[in-house]
Length: 99
Image 1 (tube, rainbow, N blue to C red):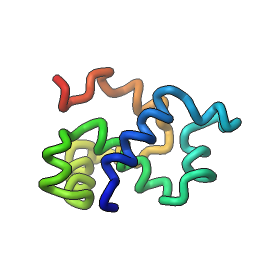
Image 2 (image 1 turned 135 degrees about the vertical axis):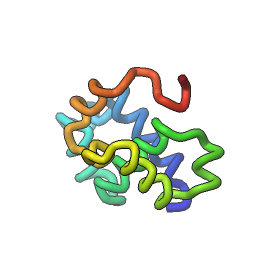
Image 3 (image 1 turned 180 degrees about the vertical axis):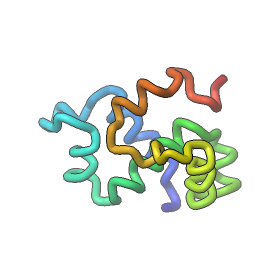
Image 4 (image 1 turned 45 degrees about the vertical axis):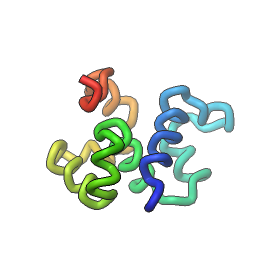
């Protein structure tokens, strides 16, 4: 879990550019389930951390604290939601850390 921010960045790119379709997957979640051996929840949380927090916060607080912060920001559990398209559409296209 030392490089979770970089993992989140790479998976964010795969999801947003729909690169999983090149491998024949119809959804980002099925790509993670079959191709990434890190666990679906960890991967989705890493993507959310990348989208939400600045790198300085990542180095200061670490994975577990940032997952807790995501849970506090989104108590409904969208940080680990498997309906990626619905969750993305509900969020602003501009990540909160870039506003």
